[in-house]
Image (cartoon, rainbow, N blue to C red):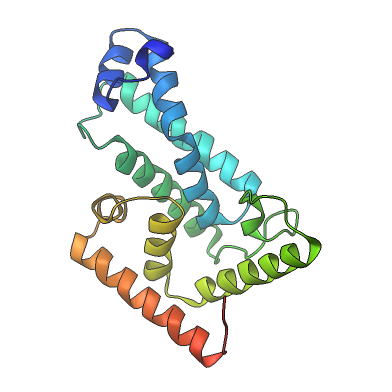
Length: 193
């Protein structure tokens, strides 16, 4: 896998097409954390996120095997779009909004690893995470989605636009209105983070 470390995504895909499975492993390892965290934030359930994450990579691998991938140089946005569509499909089937807590009844922010804090700092951090999480849940879905992909998925606005099938200006507008709405909620509730 070391020899593929400096390959571009498209070089890895071509190496996989040439029969080298290690190239595919390198590609998966490169993006697995970003893809999983994006799914987890959308579905808010660790076990469901793991299932959708696996299903996403099965679809990605099948598409690559069949040589139907044609998004040269845009692997991550393409992969996140697949995962996003699977999440949307899942919630359409359930016909309900995603839960606020995961299956263990834990706040979704607990997966963020932060240095060891004092008990008081931990409590304050948990309260801040819960407050932010609750405010995010009050945003319209399109605004919440862009904020999640930008801040938790670490995607550019171009990648967000591709993943959500909208223009860059629309993605920027959704982010702007989402942040305005968050600030308004913080002002109304006199919240300081």
